[in-house]
Length: 113
Length: 112
Image 1 (cartoon, rainbow over the protein chains, first blue to last red):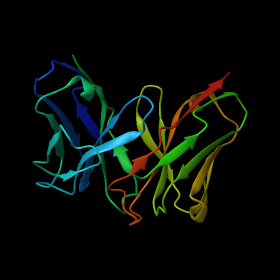
Image 2: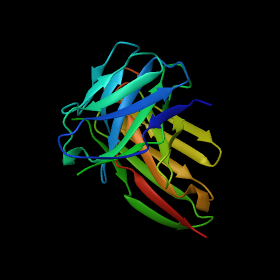
Image 3: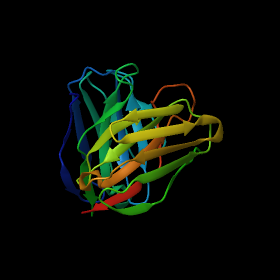
């Protein structure tokens, strides 16, 4: 069973503060993704990565940075958090040919006050 | 931008009834997947069905690519089926899922 672990599970941050969301996968997947989910919206892609050292912009990258230091780890960084970034964030991993699907973490609920 | 519309937005059933969920998308997609999100928030892939009909357990998905629509049929619903069902497509039509676009989901509640 594919495993994707996110930390922290819940986070309260202050406006203007720096927030780092972490994701670890033990599936040896090349591709990893960060999505956010808001009420009334589906998941929206923020950043993704093809492998260690690579990061690509998704559909809504503004205000976010990503880092992929290794095959297993993919971080989402909010340098200057804003209340509009209050959301639930999901990390996922996957590869073409690996059952052709994505494996999601449990999510991180972020509140920016 | 690419659009994925799901209907109905919510659905309430009695246990044992069947459910029909719809997904319409605005572009040709070579990758279409259905996901289930539990009431607790966890997400799992149910099946991938870019075209034709596919079955798994009590789930049947039918995708008509040229009409840009897919359906998910849940037979003999159970209370444990309650949650949100999300449809996602690959808007670039290149067969990858690097930039899946998700619909807002159908929230299903199955009552005992």
